[in-house]
Image 1: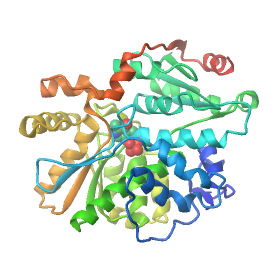
Image 2: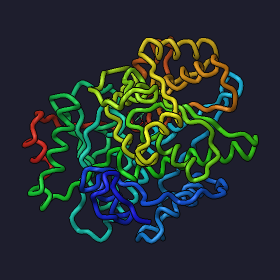
Image 3: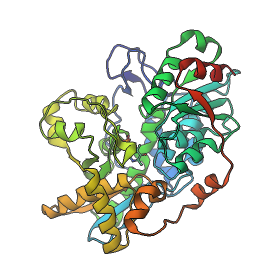
Image 4: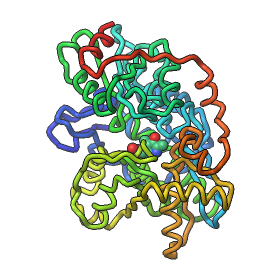
Length: 429
Ligand SMILES: *Cc1c(COP(=O)(O)O)cnc(C)c1O
């Protein structure tokens, strides 16, 4: 399959090249030249089998195609259960059973595995530069840890991530270097961008990024929607409808693409925090990116959702049709807190702040008389956000085993000033 840029002025490339490049040269995002035709799909016995089946058309003709099944087996080695909630016909799709307890593990593990194979012939290691405000950096560090031919340099704003997140970022070592930057997340991101644009540096130190626009992260995320949607349809005869906590729109776009490929899914509704660029658009306003505001669901603090460009491409730039196809709702911090406390008190259920936005949106829909089978998508384990969740539920949270193992390791991060020279020295080291 061939991939083109959403901005239409880059040459078409194969999947391997699109994955290795991240962004297209014209600044657009890679999309398939044509989506595979809708087909009758059957869930595999395992997530890995479902992934191979779903992704095969995208890998057709690429050097990675013969390795797809093995990539899927190695990347999808944890469960993604669909559980029932206390309220009738409501479910939760739990995406947080991977090594760093957030859904980003899925995409990061697939991307790392694929990139490592693409780099197998190269003698110079590829360095992945990541700026993180928390979740992404940990998932990428865990996924790339000890992958041959790859190195990760991850930057985070010192003192501005949770103690557990900081520990996760610093606990890998080996081919993962953690830098704690005396500055903000925006400073970290600016340093990463400067490095990725530094052609002289890249002649000696090849660089790449692993952010959420990479096809190597986006495409595998279709898998859990396919697995849940197909199994639910087979067992109940009903379509599963989804409410998805949304920031950069990568997770929701994967669900939308899965439905385009023939996965039996019903409505797809977006839940955001106070960053309401998408709700304003779907309510009939213009698409107007804004500076992000800080919330307690911080992995969704996004003012300019990067994958929106892909969604517009999918609807051929027809904003009217796009607005008809989706609904989006914004949930403020006070309501997120209330939802976490109320669901725990009423049903013993525990949600992270991101997942709680979706739970609240589903409650709104039900109040308006919405019927059918629905699932909220749980993007992280609540124990990752213990400082928000524990005071609301009045008890300590059990830490999942994989996360506890990371927290038990020693951690180290090198302090650096918020200055590109400091990053460059680390990259050259
Ligand atoms: C990244 C993240 C999100 C937002 O996902 P997008 O793909 O950016 O929309 C939601 N919840 C958690 C816990 C995350 O880490």
